[in-house]
Image (cartoon, rainbow, N blue to C red):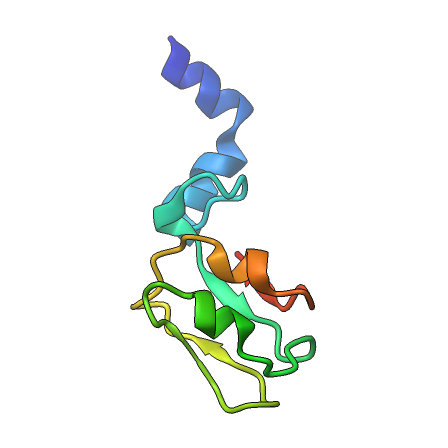
Length: 89
């Protein structure tokens, strides 16, 4: 049975999806969360400018925040940030 085989070999992945609501492989966009690393973010605003959902806000030269309710998880912010301050969890 293929389902039982995958459960046997990928139990950790199944449990992460079901119990932790996260995808370790970053393949399930519905389970991804985008966040800003406040120590790396310099507040340049590049990520906010490219966000099609308007989910990123913050004052200039201050760490920005991502509104996870608005975020459509497109990855534009990650591509635009040259400080690697956007984290995909």
